[in-house]
Amino acid sequence: MSKLAIFGEIWAFMRVRKKWWLLPIIITLTLLGLILIFAQGSALAPFIYTIV
Image (cartoon, rainbow, N blue to C red; front, side):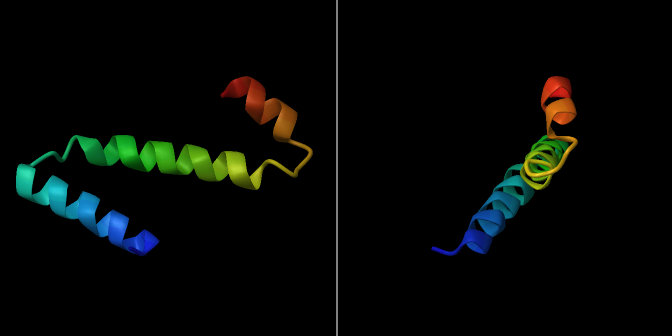
């Protein structure tokens, strides 16, 4: 199972069961995770970790 298939499964679940309120939560968690990953090696890392 590829990583993109997981996103397809989540999208199909939300579309069929009308769980549109999950979309902002998933987007927020994804963006927060990306910020933590990309800022890990930068000089801003200590400041970002204290905010989160």
